[in-house]
Length: 574
Image (cartoon, rainbow, N blue to C red):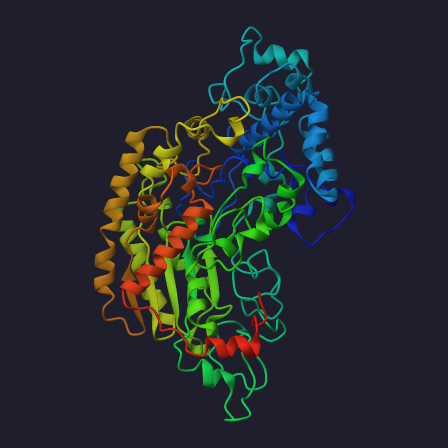
């Protein structure tokens, strides 16, 4: 179900979504939940450390893609009492001009033959089965059609759909499904930092203040007499003392960077509700479509570890507070400005830690500041169904090897902090019987329906947690608890490491659930029914920072913060 786009039209663009016509419709790959990046057909976690293309096909994500878009068009038709063709035009009209034109062109290829079926009241599931994007009739997210007298074969014959052949997204455009990126794609000097926000740029790592010089980057341990080599906005010489401002105000302040190495929660995976709800869809909400795709459906600039933006800049898709470990450390010491790195990847598990450490830019041989490095794989190790569950021994070996590797290259004085696997049972229990946004118009789709649908298709990002069966979720937690029990052993065995100290946190997700003064479903991402919402993400950031303080590893407040702000203002911003 992928359509070559401006490439076929003879245009070339620098970013992915304007190179392929699927861009306007690739939102359906995110319409329900994040896709699995996996060799195994069910679950976010995977066995090989290298990023793998999405496994799309009939009864996989091609089916989800078709059903989601058809469902939205069908609901717009019902809501506004207009034909499906007009509803499709309305849907495409919510996008900006270029994306809107692509959407309309893609529509002609994708569901032109299905519009009459929508007008006749066929369910989105049945429509996509009729046009061969879905083949398992027993898998459906919407209630079955009332009209069961006509078979699929008869329906295809009646509407001349017999010769339709679905086009696999990743088969036609393999690069489109390569959601993982190992580093910024716009890094001129190759130092790992960029001036461009998305595609692993400044939304993910501190802004490079000279992208033509590989010796200038955030986190460098420099004195900055004539220029800002560590990009924290502090440079120059104090005429009264003859010392640089870095020497006067930063050198003895124990500056520290923040580095998150983790999964989709680390990266703050979120699909805005406007992409699945006909009540919330708007041009304003969909204006972020291209940067959202370029950022892999993640929002690291609002995350619990490395967030630095206000949610007000992302309205109406985000509301609520932004609290992060980096933001709190910056308040304590303005010398930490821009010193953050988010190495979070959707679908990652403990087995990926060693590989992801290669993306961390913090080699002590290059004179860099120490950092708090968070190993934050909080869910995916228990996503795969038995008998292929990862074992506690696998978890122990993966994390232990990563700790040793971190000691090999991190600067002395750094901390590695292990975040345990979260107990997601309360999270799922709080939403499993609630109406999902895609079913809000007719109150006909619950989160439990969504979980069952994805599991039926073998397309679930996390079978262990995203499951309507509480026995399955209890088994996932049993396995997670056994893995978490390995963490004290890992910490104890790290006592003799030369350059880093290793600590473990208690589960910040459980703390957020226990301390939130409101209904628990508000802490859950409303679209995927699994990831932390923005409110929960802020609570997690607050809790992690508090635990750093309790552990006695929080650096002191810088008494020169006011001097820095008077002299350098916002220090160049972000």
